[in-house]
Length: 189
Image (cartoon, rainbow, N blue to C red; front, top):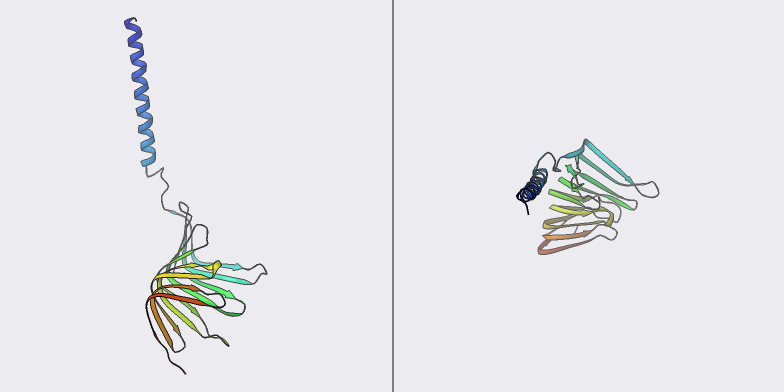
């Protein structure tokens, strides 16, 4: 080969190597750039948030209120400050679920309640009042289900039961399971 052709091929090879290096460098900068990365920033928010949900017959099914609501686009979650969820049942008093903070999953099927959580149902003919104090609860409103791994206290009329770990189905009939360190005080009228 002639020296000029060897030199030309060396320049082409060097140009290909430098070009490949520059492409990798620009891809690296793009994935590490905070401007181009999706950040966990609010897509939209509301103050004094209220959401009403109706059943197929047009009756109120649930009501969710919160001091603030913030929706995040990166993970599609909705964060709530002081959420209060009311679950309506036409035959019994409504269930009221309140917490310090709530996070609604992207698909809306689960609500993660953080901090102190209270579940209540008022007294009605043939129905005893019930109050549950706990924390860090997971609620599936469509399945009438709630659970926690934390301590839970159940208060009903003159009775008090507590334990660690709880599962609750709050449809009719109400079923509650406590998993460990269960203690209770029961009294009759």
